[in-house]
Image (cartoon, rainbow, N blue to C red; front, side):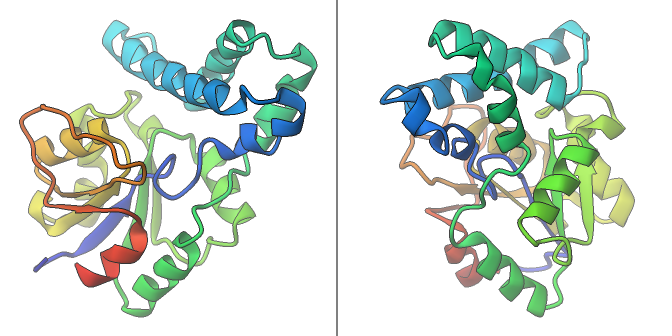
Length: 220
């Protein structure tokens, strides 16, 4: 992949395991913890898309709380666990290869940044809790434009900041809809297919598909 001036990462599900909050409580939740975690994530994403379409914006933390409340009712999770789950969501664990790969990319003097639905405070806490604060040049949040991915205004943010062309960005996400959105926008989008999923039919084919971030070192 040539002429790349910035490598931009999605955060949730790409760098950080969104199921790790519920997994850390699996002894309390029981066997349904994974189904609950997936339902929480799906509801959270649906709320971001619906709020963007309805033009009824709430920030990502409020959406995370609202989607958790619905998920806990649906899965009959004890309400006393709410604060514990929310606190754990603030310090999600990275996927195992992430710290080493990011450090290797940083050693190559590549411009690295995050572009996420998360709020600035959420993202900064998440990155700091995992000792990654010296890795990224910028942490971009959709709060700058007040609408969620995959709105093109979100993908505009780093282009305007860096004054570069769309095709000079390598963008990585584990979320198929994010790859479709960023790819149709004009990024060189790389799908991190962690769970051997099937890609969407949304007018874009990823430039590359990798199982985890360690394969990125062979591309960049």
